[in-house]
Length: 188
Image (cartoon, rainbow, N blue to C red; front, top):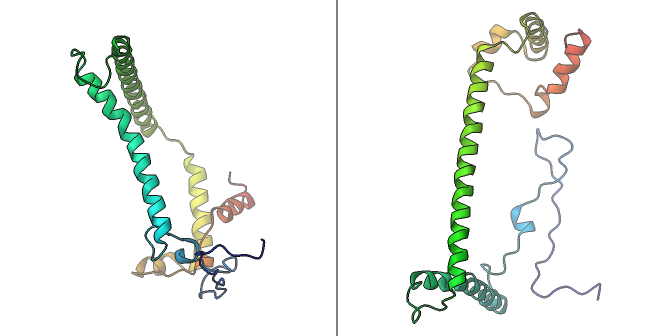
């Protein structure tokens, strides 16, 4: 049983191990969508699978729509006992109570989120008016970072003159590198 293949399953494709130039070393292979996606319903052949899936989907939709149709019919014909699919008077009372409860819950939800939104806006305004950083430490950090960028990518005026700067993917500046540099100069 372990050596048998499922009929209709696609043959496994070998994984490509060719790396594109400039990609990091940890990217050892590329996986295409067609290698991992098998869609038997919209694909070619497999008519039996398509019919079985279609029947299941239609039965599922029938049982989704049926309760909605029954409830709608009952509510529309609430005062006419001869019409509608059922006429359960206690059920109508429960329906009304449930709708009132859900309405109150919705109003509380909206009011609560409105209050939270207004508090957040007020907090942001007060935070925008106050400084959240130390200007001396920021100046030191900018000086150290600018010197490091100059060593890595060239002088600032040359960098600013260029319309387009291409940096190799492995040559990008990582956050941890700047943090380590700040720690080296005791700038926290």
